[in-house]
Length: 214
Ligand code: DC
Image 1 (tube, rainbow, N blue to C red):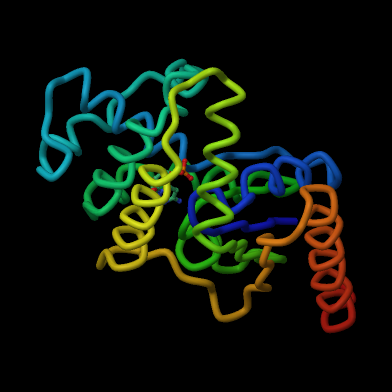
Image 2 (cartoon, helix red, strand yellow):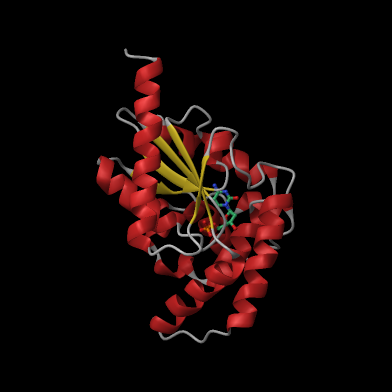
């Protein structure tokens, strides 16, 4: 079974996907980390994130980098969003994600284009959203709890900028697949959001079984 989870930054999709993977005992891939690794490598190489060939050169990173906590910073997230507009970068990361999705037994993947491009035949697709203010507040609280300096207004402006870029790029923009279930987590606790996500996936699977009993 393949579960595709897409949505904007800080929508809750990461936590929801991790818990879905645990619940259904499936391997999990946070595809945003791949783009973050490109952003990180590009910065180390002194490249320009808006230059397609600099960004492509940064796609050759070592897998060990994916475990580096430095990838989670807001700065690297912003670089990831910028490098992800280049079709050459998306192509370079495509096979790795598709191979992960199509492994025997299936997988859970989260990102921006999983339901539309990476796994268009996924058994269940969730599109997780939340109001920008709710997402900025979550990010603000996370940063404060890690002891990082955080200014709510700056975080909100950054989130809106990234949404704009991710939704309006020509290559694989962030948008729900036609057959995705929408989950708005603005007013939900994480526990309830996960319960609703599991209910949506279960409903999709049972519908599939009804249609194709093989
Ligand atoms: O999910 P995240 O915040 O870690 O993702 C960082 C950036 O990477 C995001 O702003 C856009 C890009 N990205 C993408 O274009 N496609 C994906 N499947 C995952 C992330």
